[in-house]
Structures are given as C-alpha cells and as structure tokens.
Figure 1: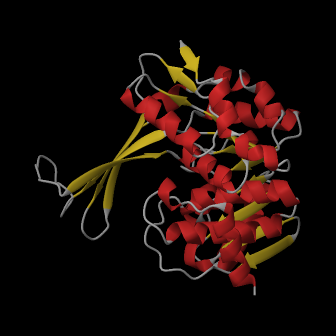
Figure 2: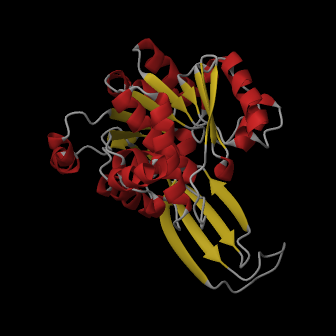
Length: 330
C-alpha cells in the first residue's frame, strides 16, 4: 500500500512563485529519492577492519531528486514522481523537495519499505567507496507511473534517469510519447543491456563514461564523442548531448554536431554537476525551444555546481546561472 504526499495548503505555498511567472514550464521528474550518509575517514577500511571516522553527515540526494531541485531553482514548475519508504528519512526527503519548490503530490510513500539510502565513505585523498540501497526506489512500478498519467500528459517535459526499475522508465517514455511530451533521458547508471524503446527519446544526455558504455566506443575526446553521439542517434535518440567535464559538451542535432566549450572553474566537487546540467537544460529548452542555447545555459549550471561542495547544496539558481552564462558568452 502507499500514500501520496498531497496537501493543498503546502501546494499553494510551494508554487506561489509561479503566480508571477506564467511562462514557467511544467517539468515532471521520474526518478530516485535518496538519503546520502557520508562518512569521512583517513583511509577506507579494509575487509574486517574497524576504523574511527573523522565525521559524518546526512544530505538529501538521489539523481531524480537532484534534478528536480535543479529544475525548480532554474525557474521550472516541477513535480516529483517517485517513492520514499515509511522510515524516519521519508519526511525529511519530502520536506526538502518542498522547501526547494518541488510539488510532491505524486510522490508516494510505501509501507514496510525503507527509503533509498547511499552510504558513502570518503578518505583524505577524496577517494570514495559507495554502497547504495535502492529501497523504495526499487518498488516504484509501472502502475505507479500509470497513476500519474494526467500529470505526465500536462507536462512540457519529462525527465528520467535509471535509478528506478526499467519498467517504470519505459512506461514513462511510452506515456510521454503518447501525449507528445518531450522526454530527456539521463542514462545513469548505464544499463548492461539496451532495450530499444529506451532510447526513443527527444534527448539523451550521458557523460563520456555512460556514452562509452552505451555505444561500446571509446569516448575520451571531442572527436570520439561526436562518433558516439551519432551512434546514439542511430539507436533512436532524436538529439544527443555528451557532457565531458573540462572538455565541454558535444551536441548532435540532426546532421549537425556542435562542440560547446567548457566554462573554466576550480572544480571542488562534481557530485551533482550532471544533475544541475540536466535540470537547467530541461527548463531552458522548454522555455526557448532552442536546444543549443539550452545546452550553453546548462553548461554554466554544471560549472557552478562543480565549483561548490555537496550535491543539492551546490546547485545554482536561475539568476546565478544567467549571470555566469552572460560572462562567458561575452
């Protein structure tokens, strides 16, 4: 059984900013919601070894939730389509999304299930060891997506990642295509096998590692990224953006491939840079219908996130992104 997080009063408060922003695009994010537990230690423990750690912290994460926050901060009217459990983390995770302006009317709470959890150990050199317990994310089913058909139908864009079951992802794509809703797929984590209908999207935006996994081609420079982008297009994606960190991004539209140069920053933490990129891109593309412009805008969003510590705490607002973008377009 499950409950939905509906509250008319809270909905009014969350979306109050949109009353003066009639052109805020409606973005629905179908994806994961996690609590991240970060433990910092001098060295990562060996098997059977007990160490005293230096500190610990809890922060809200999950690629779906990160992208929902990024889209909301970029000016979108965002709804989260996902699941949490019935543990102590559930309320914190939902309240965090609402605090960032994300509508959680279609987020469900599953009884007898734990919320998604990522346990991250980080040593002094920055190396990490991560264990992810999907929890409620793994129970987000095809029927859960079907229950949100009206929400998807009324959206300008559906954003999807691969941290929920494939059946839910494919159903989201099917419904969006049925109603002519634009679909952006962030193929992370990259699947071991590609279901043909998975790539029938308006835009796929992998990083270089994911692009290589999907195409079985090397992606270590712009030339190789262009070849991989063409192959992803041949596999079904209408448009392709491959993000390459300090190398910039490669965009393929139709028969045209464009290299978007990187924005130089002192990278501190790249944890949510890709999510910041995706969320900003979805909003700007929906607003302008200009994909090249949207990728440039998203490039600025990703650069800002990489220059700040943390996941959702590193994501910039629309005003910050526009200021950064204008500086580097001069």
